[in-house]
Image (spheres, chains in turn purple, cyan):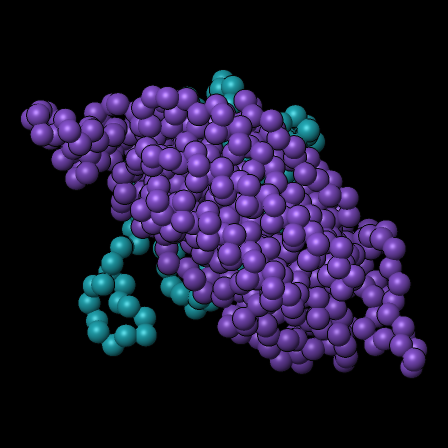
Length: 447
Length: 163
């Protein structure tokens, strides 16, 4: 086999190398260097090794190993990359992770199912509500309970608002990585709108512990319709301003088009999900393909790309904000009345007013928050579409009040594997842009 | 592949479940069965993790499957059929090793490294089976049930004793 299946093929975008009065620029376009296709894109060396002389490097004398991170300001947290370079071209890459590992899966085994949501919400800190959602769905699947319709729709509303805030945050940091500080300010400004609504509803801006097994922690605040309406109108209007700022801008397009491209075969082989998989043209969105909550009752489009490059991933995220606005507006119309959490004294605490009148309610309240509730023995895998891809939870119960094993399949952790394929043959100057377009959240990668 | 002394009898059973069928597979058939499932249209390895059943040995298993200490759980995803399948392999404590899926699903590389790091399950044939989350010189496998919580002195601090 001569061709490396993991090597990205150059995309077919119109590309004109930059010409100067001295001839074409030193920064040649990707693909100019003839790559050895028998060598894979992943650099497999010990983390401590940095001397190229000790390493079996791909091309011999002219290569060097550059260590990028973990304190690099543009690697989105504590991500470290070891890059094998020839001149300015990246050959192989080794992502080194684990600097933020705090043993959250071990901690989950020591917490009850009631406390569990407070733990998982700290994993992907940009989409905390999706973490809580997947944990709650897995617990509910083991319990065999159904949450009331209002709780389902509140969960959907909050997940879509969270998707908006997460993508806005990505727009901000991606803009900053590409040198557009204005985009950073605008992205954070719009995200603030969403976070203020979260604060009003859940009490916190991040790490909400709002979605819990059995429903949600509290009902939506009075006048939530108006707040959400304002968020939808503002964010939707602003996305068209981002279009003017970035989408049509020649410098932005030069820096994103045909940079870090990926083919659909490679993306599937590397288990990539979310915007990375969709950018290669695969219409895979769990909200559509394997609907959960009530996503089969709302109307929205799955955005796909063509070339699998940075620009496609940018366009997908920008348009997914608009689709989320569309879903949120439908949720506004269809929000059912009723309970916001299951009224099952064995799973959820009784309403506050019942505690004053009923001895049993007081006992149940006390039991739920001290011992928690017992979950029948079994194991389950549940997945939701987080802003970064398939967020899965594999939960094993041994019949006690604490999970026997709580494994979280973090989309960032798996998507990081596409980095060597995306970077191979590209320029080191584009490395930061490519890392940004993968959108890794290190809290979730390292857990 | 090598057969450990505590090898599971060659049993494959499928539990009927509409959402995600469960497949219990013996260790010596594991790789072939996954290859067969890949040929049937499960293009993606969505998730791979290990579970340590040390303190919960009496779990429910179908007839013919003898529970071992470790279990490797693989979630395969079919994009074309919109279906999932979950494979559970019993791995004995005396020889905690299973063949790697890297040749079938290159995306399982990081997940197998994590399972090795956290549980000490060796994936034979893996191209780079090193620790991924813990430091390279770390001793022990944190998610094993006999690895204590809070009994590890805090690194970088002189104070000994429990955290």
